Length: 400
Image 1 (tube, helix red, strand yellow):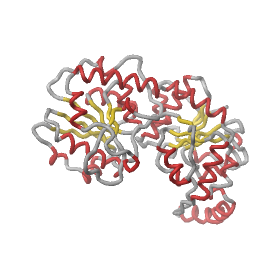
Image 2: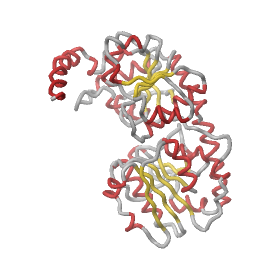
Image 3: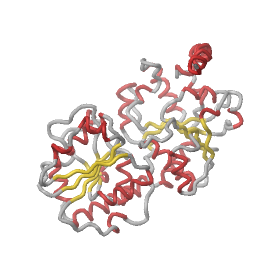
Image 4: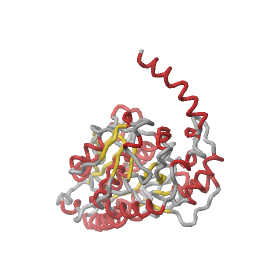
């Protein structure tokens, strides 16, 4: 069995990119054969080559109906977080597929253009469950399946997000922990659902009467400034520095340089946790967060959660910003938080452990690409027929 991954992104600095890199690293530790559909000169392959990991990379443009059999076989398995349209090419080969829910969109699993098509989505989810081919990164997807499709999953299959871990606590080894100020860091793309939680953190930090230096790493500073003017937030206690775009392999050094505390969600929270940096999870929100807001430490997470939809979180659960800093102000307090964070991350998210879970789930799965054809509209013959008629004209117009 070969483990296959696909990404459209060439240089995108996203949690999804980091996740694929880490799954490949974990499977490589287990000496598994891996195929990546992406770019040979893309970020994923370049980051792997830096660590001496060579895998088979296939350019998407090189795949056709005539040659796809030269690259894949019925014994291969694809880990996907959506069903790509080009998987039409794989139907004749009929490899295994395992669906990994890592976002808030399983309700749109069978979306066709602007139509959500929930009745097809429900049938698809039921079939994935029957064939042991539906995995969740945390319980967000489990809640969504119940909300959108009225399906109650009693024993969900969780596959935690993997992260590169260390044998020793890097934060405590850094030796730069006794200062008159605290360093706080945040990393994230400039998306509204990430920005609103960050803006709430920055507002709450202004309530803490201690010297805090905040470092913010985003993918686009100009877009960030549309949401937030940091100059307006600065005070005698609070100062800011903003950075733009680091590769996944550069993130650990950035965090060790700039963080005694880390606020974040998703894969970046694990980057900090793996280093032993005390990490506070943020929930995601598509609107400004007002009223009382509570925070949770990463090591308090349930079902591997790395941040929840704020609409689905119980109000009053967690700690205020003042309570967070009461424990984190002293080095003794941070040392205890650091050890709890470090041990939690190793126990639940280490590369090899997560890769073993993945191998186990892949061996149990019996869902194949031909099964998706029944419910995913982009695999229906009318769509393929119409696209076959239109594509030659589109390519001709594009060439002119």
